[in-house]
Amino acid sequence: MTRPFTHALALLPCLMIASVASAAEKAPWVWAGSYVYEHDGSRTVGGSPIVVTYRLDIAPARGNRDCVLRIEGFQTNETIVCKAAGTLDSITVSFHTFGDGRIVNASGTRLYDVGTNLFEIRRVGEAVSTQWRALNPSGAGSSAPAGTSFARKG
Image 1: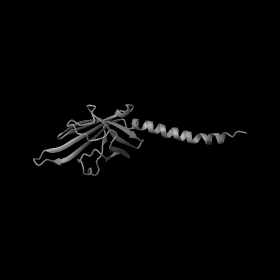
Image 2 (image 1 turned 30 degrees about the horizontal axis):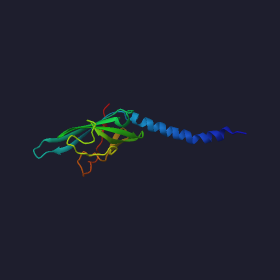
Image 3 (image 1 turned 90 degrees about the horizontal axis):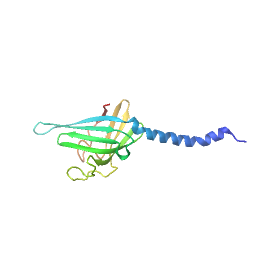
Image 4 (image 1 turned 30 degrees about the vertical axis):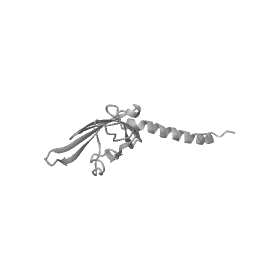
């Protein structure tokens, strides 16, 4: 005699795996949109403001190129093609190439390997919290200022 309840229990792990896989596939879509962070690096010795704007645009389903990070401002004009992956609550933004398709910047310097974790963003209520990794608005070798975060813009 076959027991339907036993068969249902046997299918439970498969359903759980499918549910987790489905959530992972949807994660980048939940994050789709534009995010902006404006870094205020104080002023130069001459008094000029040191402001750099980071604009992250996420458009999933483009393989390793589902986000673009534009960094513009004081002595900075850079575009990074990136990969966004993670969960519904947080994603990791990883380096793919610079905007021109090369893995070296305009000066010919290799700053990141393909796949390097640049930063993570996480939902904290309605806000977005940022954990800087290889990319750091405060400069190499120093920690990012407390409370830095991207804000959703659309």
